[in-house]
Structure formats: structure tokens, C-alpha cells
Amino acid sequence: MENDLSIAQKAELTHIRNIADQLNIKEDDLIYYGRYKAKIPLNYINEEKVQKSNLILVSAMSPTPAGEGKTTCSIGIAQAMNRIGRKTTVVLREPSLGPVFGIKGGAAGGGYSQVLPMEDINMHFTGDFAAIEKANNLLAAVIDNSIQNKKNTLNIDPRTVAWKRVMDMNDRSLRSIVSGLGGKGNGVPREAGFNITAASEIMAILCLVNNRRELKEKLGNIYVGNTYDGKPVFARDLKAHGAMAALLKDAIMPNLVQTIEQTPAIIHGGPFANIAQGTNTIIATKMGLSLSDNVVTEAGFGFDLGGEKFLDIKCRMGNLVPRCIVIIATIRALKYHGGVDLADLKAENVDAVRAGFVNLEKHLNNSRRFGIPAIVAINRFVTDTDAEVNACIEKCKSIGFDAHSIEIWAKGGGGALNIAEAIGKIVDNNQQQQFRPLYSTDTSIEDKISAIAKNIYGASSVEFGAKAKADLKVIKRLKLTHLCVCIAKTQKSFSDNPDRLGAPEGFVLNVREIEIAAGAGFVVPVTGEMMRMPGLPEVPSAEFIDIDDDGNITGLF
Image (cartoon, rainbow, N blue to C red; front, side, top):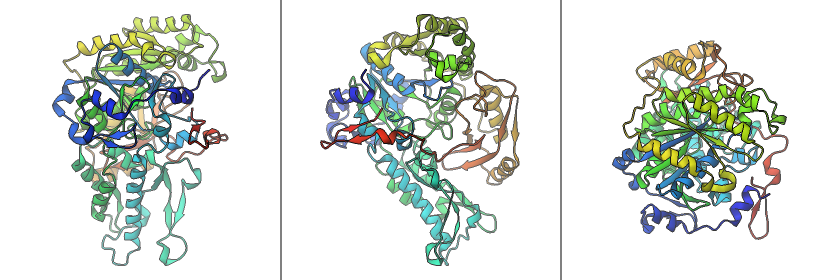
């Protein structure tokens, strides 16, 4: 059986100018990165066209550890919509090198629903992550320089600085360090550390701006820490935001590539969904809507994380409204939430499918709260039986949702024609937008957290730990209560306990601290132990990746 990389390397790519031509982008306007990658200038965004085009949001039920294939499904659905004559662009996040070399391997779709060139997209791409890393670390260097400088007029208290350096690699040894050792000339010793680049607030900011002016403004709003007399210090006070924005001069422009069927694909930004908003940039989404009649885009992990954040944060800040939500389900995930061990997921078990449906049902009912019609795509694997698939379809219909089985890994767009037709009917009939965010920004931070915890997760209440209560006081003192909330939570469960599968109810959501991401425009209530600098597994994917004498990469999967 062929793997993703071998399929990708056999694919016939067309020059990127031909993909641009599909979108009516002038050849001379492209900023080329070789023959198959290019950046699109921001002046191609047309706000009037953005509001007229159809935005289709792909999310999922709570995933198994292997994931349920949202990226692959998004690509396959976009290809299918083009096959039925609906001009469509797929808009996705950029992969992080951490997962590429860690557990997941490549992250550019799979089979005959991939974005290409797969190797380039997975490894460095156009350098956006590197630019974000440099901008983040510039601020870190300026902070330490201000603390070191005897003429420092800001009087920063190093004990209050929470800003960390970042790198795009899984390296647990850098999570918590002491910097500034080696004498007075090397800085002031203090506790510090590294996050992975995808977890940087710079990444979140890049993904939530509409233009360069907003980028510089939001970078200036980054909360750094306090002075010794308790006054807040922001990046603008350090005069760092201009240089940071300059480093992101090219990174702010979205990247154009193609799918295996030469459907236009825009890939830009890559925040994680369990600790940030988990979706591509507002700019990329608007670019796709400006250049196509339909955009298929994804939000990370389950609808309780990526979907809620997409709607409550990204849509609010970008004035975006999806016309259809696609919830990806798999038979293996249904059986997993129905109590089947990971090792036994390939064996037929219709009863477990029905038992695990409570998880999918909760996500579907959550979608109703936002006023946007939803449809279910069952990402079918070769081990799934007709009885299992039909059981899921019947359960979906019993609660008022249409469901379709798709086979996009093996058949590409041809394996999703049924759901493409169904999506087309939904968007044609949903021109009167009824979108309702879950909360108003005028309410308190506590009320916003409670609204998500009770309405989306199924919690009975929220418990704020001592650190979280202290953080709430700081947020009120800084007059930042108008910010959105971006809850950091495990993707494995609706609750903050990854072992509670299915659709738990009546639990207490425990918030242990609340981080301030004033630049991004949200605060981050942290539940459980959230990993911002992952470690490599015992056998990392990096061990299987290689390159031959002709420059051909192997081992990406």
C-alpha cells in the first residue's frame, strides 16, 4: 500500500502561476518561492467579496490520539466542490516542525487529499515560523537588555516577566531554564524558558490581524510584566513593536500552493488549538473568500476547542460568518468514546459506535448554539464496516443532522462528491446569516469562562484556583475585562480530565491560572497541565526522515 509521501512524490504539480490564474491573480503580483509556492500581496483582499462568499468550517468530534483527519477531509471536500463546479479554495494552517519530527510526522493531508509540495510545506515552507520565532525572541532580548541596562527607565521587575523565548522544535530540556548566568556582563540571572513557536503569542497575533496596521498595534499591546512599583509594561513601552512588525513583513502575506488535484490552497499561520485559537490567519481566510466563491477551512481538534474559538474569537475579530459547519467523525473515534481500547478499534463493534455517539451528539448540539447549520462527514477507513457506518448515519438522522460517508484518502475529491453536493445546498439556502456568538465581550471574564464551560463542555460550575483569582484581579486592574477568552484544555475530553471520554456532565472545570495575551486580544484560562514545549517520544518520527544524494526526502508520513 502506498503511503502519503510516495503518493505526493508521484503527483504532477503545475507551476504556481497556473494556480494563481485560477484565482485571477496577476503573475507579476506573486512573490515566488520556487516554482510551486508563492505569497499573495494583501491588496487582493476584497472585504465586499468576503461577505458574499461562502465560508465552510470543518471541525470534529473529540479525537483519538491519532486524530480524525480534519486536514485531509478539508482538502478532499474542497477538491470535491471544485469537481461539481463550485469555485473553491482550501485554507489551512501551516505544520509545526515539532509534531513533524515528534509523533505525527507530516501534516499536509493524506493520500489523494494532500497539499503540495508536501515536503516543503512540512519542513520550513516559506519561513513564516522562523520570522515569528525571531520576532518573539527579539522582544525577549529587548526585555533582558532593559533589565540589564543601568540607564533603564522602565524599572522592570524581572520576577514579573512571563515572556518566554520560542523555537519550532520539541525540546523538553528548554521548558524551564535559568538565563543570564556567567557574571554581570551576561545579564541578570532569572528563571526563564522556551515555548514551541506555535504557542507564541506572536503566532496568535499574526493569525488575528486584518492588516499591517493592526499587526503593529497588537504587537505593541503585548503585556510583558510590571515595574517594581507595580505599573504594567507593554511591548510598546520597550519600543520593540516596530522592529517586530518589520521582521514579519513577508510572514503576514499568505502562502499559495495546490492540492494533489490542483485545487488552490492557501496555507498561513499555525497556532495550536488546545492552548491557542487553533486556526489559520484571518488574512488567509479573507484572501480565499476574496478570490473564490467558497472557502473550506478547518479549526483544530474537536468543536469544543477549535470550533468554539473560531466562532467566538476569529469570527468576532475578522467579521467572518461561516455558512456551514462540517463535523468530522470516524468510526474508530465513536468506538473509542464508546469504551473500546485503542488496540481493539479495528474490530467491528456496532454497539460501541452507538454508545460513543454521545460525544458526537454533544458536538452537534453545541453547533446549534451558534445558529449555523451543521452536517456530519464520516471519514471512512478500510476497517470500517457498513453496519458501523449505517449505525452512525441513523443516529445522526434521529437528532436532525444529515450525515455522509466519505473516502477522501483513497479517492480524493471523487470520494466526497455526496457531501459536496449537500454542503452546496446548505450554503445556497443559508444566505440570511443567523450567527450568534456564545458570549458578549461586555460580560466579565468569569462569566465568559462559565458560558463556555457550561454550554459547550457540559460543566456544572467553574472553580478558580488561588493563582487564577489573583490573575483575575490583575486583569481587572489593567482594565482588560473586555478581552475574549481562549481556554487551554485537553483535546481528549469535554472536561479538564483527559480520561473522561464520551460526554461527561455535571463536572467542575478547574481553572488554575489565567494568562494575559493582551496583544492577541484574549486571556488564556489554563485548565490542567498544558504543555507549551512538548518533548520527543521514545521513538520520534525524526528517526525515519532522511534525504538521498539527489535531494529526495523520505520518511515523512
